Structures are given as C-alpha cells and as structure tokens.
Amino acid sequence: MKKFSWILPIALFAACAGREEQTAQQQDYHEPHRPQVHFSPKRGWMNDPNGMVYFNGTYHLFFQHNPDSTVWGPMHWGHATSKDLVHWAEQPIALYPDSLGTIFSGSAVVDANNTTGFGKQGQIPLVAIFTHHNTAGEKAGRADFQTQSLAYSVDEGKTWTKYSGNPVLRNPGIRDFRDPKVSWFEPGKNWIMTLATSDHISFYSSPNLKDWTKESEFGKEMGAHGGVWECPDLFTLDYKGEKIWVLVVNLNPGGPNQGSATQYFTGQFDGHRFTPNHTGTKWLDYGPDEYAGITWSNTGDRKIFLGWMSNWQYAGVVPTGKWRSALTIPRELGLEKTGNDYLVVSRPVKELDLLAEKSATLSNITATTIDLTQKTGKLSGPARIDITSDKLESFTLTLSNDAGEKLLIGYDKAANNYFIDRRMAGEVQFEKGFAAKHTAPRFTGRDPVDLTLILDNASVELFADGGLTVMTEIFFPQSPFSSIRLQSGNRFKIKSLQVSPMKSSWQ
Image 1 (cartoon, helix red, strand yellow):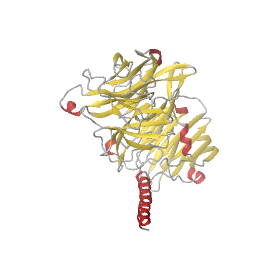
Image 2: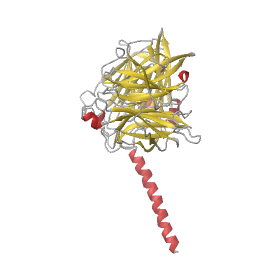
Image 3: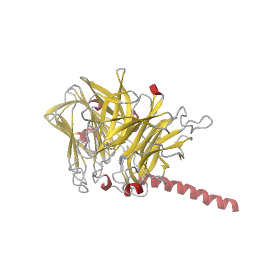
Image 4: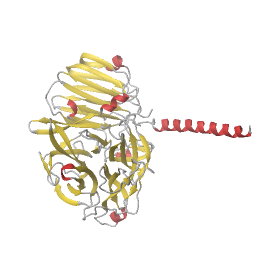
C-alpha cells in the first residue's frame, strides 16, 4: 500500500503534465494571426530559411532565429523537421553564437562521399555551411567581419559540431560577404559555393568543403540593384530534356512592390562561370512578402522552394505576440518557355493535399456579383480556392469578416495585372507603407486559365497561370476572413470554382 500510494500520485501528475503540455501547445499555435498551414516558430523571432536538406525521409528546415525576443537580434539556427513538408516538429536549436560570431544564413548538404572526413565508420555526415557574423568587428568599423564556417552532424541532424578549423573561407574585405549556398557539381566532382558579395555573386569551388578557390563573379550590372544582394541559390531545372541553370538572388530593398524580393536569372554554368540567357530583371514572386527564398538540398530532380513570409520594411513591427514571422508554403519549381525566354514557375507542393478537407465546387457559373458564402458555406479557417476558366476577364474576389475588414484579390484586364489589395484588411497603422494595393503582370495570353489561392489566418499566396505569376501577401485582421464574394463587370464565365477548407498542420 505504501508503494502504491507513491506511484499513483506520480502517475496522475505525469498524466496531468502531459495534458497541460498538449493544451499549452494548442494555445501556442492558435493565438491571433498564428498561421495554421505555414511554419512559424513556437516563440521568438524568425527570418531567413537556412540549411534546408532532405535526408533519410526527413526534411530538415533551419532558420534565422532569435529565441529570446520577437525582434531581430543575436542569430541562431533554429531547427524543425518534417516527413511531409506540411507537419513540422520544432527541434532544439542547432547552432548557437560563439567566439567567431553569431550564426547568419547558409545551407546544408549531404556529404555522401565523405569528402570532409567528418563521417567515421561508414557514417554519412550532414554538413552546414554558414556565415559567422562578428558583431564586435562590425562595430569596430572593420570590413571583414563576415566569414564562412562549417558544422557537421553524424546523427542525421539531431546534434551539430562546429568544425575546429573555422572559418573555412575568410573575408577579403567585403562588408556584405555572406549566405553561402553549396551544392555538388558532378561534372567537376567538386562543391560549388554561391556567395552573396555586396552587389553581386561570387562563385567558389572546393573538393572537400574546407579549402575554397574563387572561380568567378556575376551580376554587377545585371538584374535589379535597388539594394544589397543576399541569399543566393544555384540549381538546374529540366525543360523538355534540356537542363537549364537557375540563379536565384534575393534583394533588399528594390523589389517590384517595394522592399524585399526574390529575383532570378536563367542560363548555363560550367563549374566556373554562370552565363545568363538574359540581363534584365525577373521576379520569382511579385508580392511584398516573400524573401530570402532558397531550395532544399538532396531532393533529386525535384526542386522545392521556401521563402520568409515578410518584408524588412515592417517585419519587426507586425502585430503578433510571442513570435514574429512565418515561412511560405513549400513550392515546387519548374520552367516554361515563351519564345526564347525561360520563366520559372512556382506551384504549391502536392503534399499540401494532406491538409485538404471536403471541397465545395461550383461549375459553369457566370460572375457578375455572387455571394459564394451562400453556396459554399462560411470559411472557418485556412482554405484553398481554385478557379478555372476558358477565358480570363476582370474580376474581384473579396474576402471579408464580421468586422467589415476585407481583402481584395483579382485581375485587371485593361492593365493585364493580377492584384492584391490589403488596405482594408485589418491592422495597418504599424508601418506607413503597409496599407497598399500590389500588382503583378500576367505573362501569358493563353487559355484556359487557372488560379490558386492558399489562404491562412494572416496571409494569402496567389498562383496564376500554372505558377507563372505568384504573389505573397500578409495582413492582420481582427478575425480570420470567413465570407467570399466574386464580382465581374464583364460577366466572367467560370468553368470551376472550388473552395477546399484545410486542416491545421498543428493538430
């Protein structure tokens, strides 16, 4: 009896503690504006996605993280994992600041051939390549305060050890010398580092991730230069059997709708130099709220892209509570060709279907003014909206709530632009430029037409014409939008309109 009298209270305590922890987690992920189908940290600040790598059935996501505040500060690498790209489990912090500096952006690779020697007894190491940012050096006025360093894991990303020989790439005297994106270049049997260096990109090569040789530079007089170049990526996409190289370059400021944005170039890379097909500017996302986007490593021919869902113009003052910022939904990249020009297309990953609930579909309708809520029911959380038509006409889709706040999404045929208008979509006074109508060009006149919207509590992502035009937008209503109305002065004939509620990925 004496033994039982001790065990029972302990068991009851453990059960109660478990229920309290589960309740706390549900509360953490259901605060006002908390995304339900996008990754956000449990608490603290987040910006750039980092070190994204796929290994042994697990997607690893690292991210710029200040765990002790909801504003930017001493950068760590936060860590989350997923088996399906939609359900994420936040893991212990992977990389902490040290004597060389705080941990800025970078990438991670699977060193399958153990070129680093970090793997022992057949272990395959994961290797992170990141920027050490020496704040003391920056404050002292030095130009070489950013260097590139390594960390490795031999337990599938659970724990990380920093390389004793850090830094592996010292700074030649460039203030902005950061964000290494590394990949294996099979023809040369070596590693290629794509590095942001002020207003251009520098390419380096290495046989072992430790010893680096500069190969070339690119971009000083090409593309957009409204701000510093950051967070680059270099990879190939297939177009009808033709391998095209894509160089992604994030830019802040100078985006098409002000502030931060992601541009790209298509061309060829021979292991030494990138030769572009074009010298003008192409944007991967025209909305104001996709930045620092890069792709996962080790996913084969499938290229999966993820960006930070915010903008440096207002990221530090958006009205959220215990956390700040979320990431976009993962997107699968592809190519389309118009004339001699290659355009990168982005589409929601198919894994997003795992969150889909029963859809309501309307077929062969003509839009003048339609209250879709009466036909599909009110929204009660995140949703996917898919529209197809044989011919595109001007239209406006209005999402609203009981407080009278509304978000306008649509197409202006005269201007040939898609648009998102968040001027009446909730709280806007925290930053003078936040309340705005943003536009994005349509890149094709082809029919039929398709449009996909991914709507969450505080964001919408638009994918039009198979992903040729993409826009990402955040907003902060008093309550999530629940009603949908469609208007068109040109009697927009819709072949199919499908509203698919989505389950929370945190459930």
